Amino acid sequence: MKRIEKAERILEILDELYPKPPIPLDHEDPFTLLVAVALSAQTTDERVNLVTPGLFRMARTPAAMAKCSVEDILAKIRSCGLAPGKAKNLKGMSELLVREHDGVVPADMEALEALPGVGHKTASVVLIQAFGVPALPVDTHIHRLAARWGLSDGKSVEKTERDLKVVFPRAAWARVHLSMIYFGRGYCPARGHDLANCPICGWAASKKRIAEEARSGGGGPVSRKAIAKNKSPAKKRR
Image 1 (cartoon, helix red, strand yellow):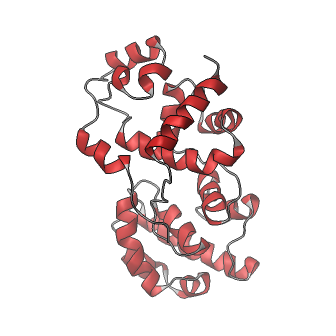
Image 2: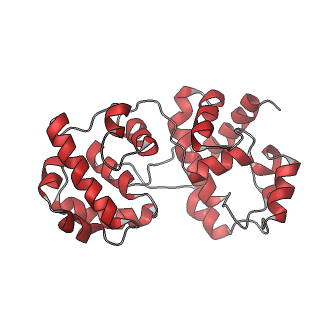
């Protein structure tokens, strides 16, 4: 089966499982989304959603965040991974937004990537989820699934992003990004996964890939609890 044909079938399955995949990070505007995505590195979305209400009560705009000390920001986000560096970056990005963008988050990849603590993936998420600019951010879940499904050789995140943009239609990139994340969490974990019985890996993964992962600790299927948690997400975008 050709990659594009495989991608078409995969998209049909993902659309059936996640017809309207919600954005998992709570936010109200481009800036609060940018902050939430920046905080999500090395921690869970659930943890970020617990932290951001207190942070945004203190400062919900670039101007307000820029006036806060790094110590004050750190006190609000301490339970997030890599909190000291993130606190410094949040203040730095806020100051730069005020100084160079009139306190407005730019809808431009180069400008976003110039902000402290903002890499290509974070910038891509903000572009597609806050501004509707076509992008296909690749995280660890998407990188893993693309390799398992034979849609990319998996040599790098950058290569995976390029490959996925070729096989999936541009209009579907936003929902592909979100639904692959949910599928990776609910059906297709990194460890303890039975590829042969996965609703997509079972037919999309090569026999060689299935055998290799089984030898390296594939084991039993993901738990029903994880599947139920991610099968029909009900969170609404704010």
